[in-house]
Length: 149
Image (tube, rainbow, N blue to C red; front, side):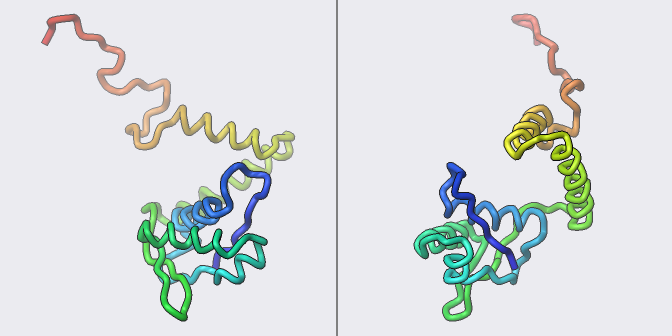
């Protein structure tokens, strides 16, 4: 079961943080179809948020087809995100954890790490044929002369 947390210092609304955590759990494989989400009451208690906040998050997840509410039983994961092999995800997560340890040892704070990650994501767009930024796309940089076919 997922353990939610809400960062009060974040500019992201609490309900959106809860939604993001479920989506991330689905992507990395810690949540799977059939898993039960914590009750509204337990999230209210553990995260000290208003019940309306949790209900809004669960409703958004339900509208996107990722969870379903079952009367009297709770809220359950019903959809999936991502298609990565769980073993590959676990291996990459371990590598990332080791890297984060090195970053922390070098004195980087959360915002530094996030900035680094964001810059790498920009430099390496998803599914761009797995090219590095130094490798142009085939035909890239080749300008056609005006009127040339």
